[in-house]
Image 1 (tube, one colour):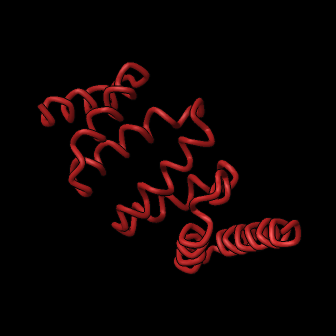
Image 2 (image 1 turned 180 degrees about the vertical axis):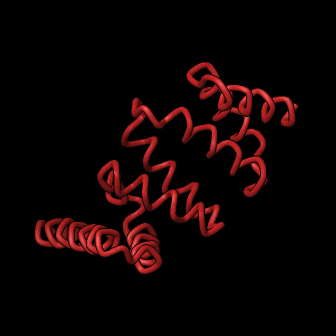
Image 3 (image 1 turned 45 degrees about the horizontal axis):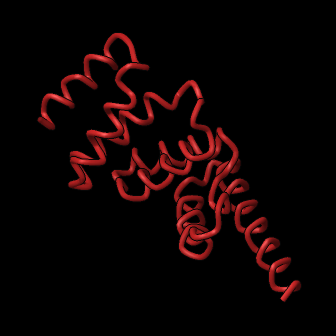
Length: 137
């Protein structure tokens, strides 16, 4: 049994390293595919599918830019799980709320995320959060 735990840890490390290698190479489409495979295989393991802050953020933004909203939401969620106090987290919560409302048909989750983000936002982002909350009713 001990061997399988070590093998799994090694497999997770190898898979994450491959995602990072692809991002560094500027190969975001293959990186996204490798990340999806990592998530499918090890998504039930805490922390297994969380990359370093920059890579997690870059990959989530890439997925969003490709209109892969469910995958982007998953990657943004992992970012928030790992880096809840990050300076970008209020904007990510707002974006995730908008994705939940408009793309994933989850108004309850959308409202919770945007309500959490709104007090931490300012300027245009705060206005957008308030408008989204108004739309959600």
